[in-house]
Image (cartoon, rainbow, N blue to C red; front, side, top):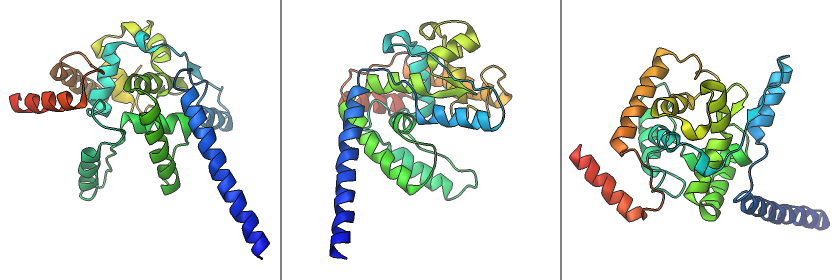
Amino acid sequence: MKDFLKKIWRFIWKSVIFFLIFSITTAIIYRWLPIPVTPLMLIRCVEQKAENKDIKLEKDWVAFEEISQNLQLAVVCSEDQNFIIHRGFDFTAIEKAMEYNSKHRKQRGASTISQQTAKNVFLWPGRSWIRKGFEVYFVFLIETLWSKERIMEVYLNVIEIGDGVYGAQAAALIYFNKNAAYLTKAEAALIAAVLPNPLKFSVAKPSSYIRYRQNWIIRQIGLWGGTLNYEVPVEKVKIKKKRKRKAD
């Protein structure tokens, strides 16, 4: 029995060490190289095959500089307004979401862009505590090893934007017949508006609700000032945002 327990223990700690080495090495490699495919992309392909549909996987990696500042601002304004400030988790947003969810039937999320990036690149969709635990680990990993620009670059290259459509460049070409670098505020806001549920909402055929979200995001971009500065120290960003709230 003791020998058996020793073998189990040896297998566990070897597995943990292997996982740590593999995950850290992968995160370091992905700090510079494009992500070839994500678990979600593969899952969607399997779902399409199971439903007897043609497999559709539209993606086209582009560098950070080739993604419109309008789109970067749009996703920050709509998905994670404290992206520049936080270290992976927005605890204020989490508290507000928990308070809202305790009083309403329709649930509200508080995932940051860093969380969504970690989930898309390294994990599978789901709400289990095990997956959430892995998500916390990978968020810590990318926030430690990657810059905010790199997190944004990866996020906008792998995010699901429609049925079989992933990333800013593929979406820009399919929906607007242009490169991601030339997306306007209105086009960027429309893309950002569908991100909460890209299989339900459509960029090509936006509903009245999506048009409402698009206009809201455009107004938020205007309030932000039209630029997204990744180099401003965290302390100055906080001061700037506090003053802005007072002015509003």
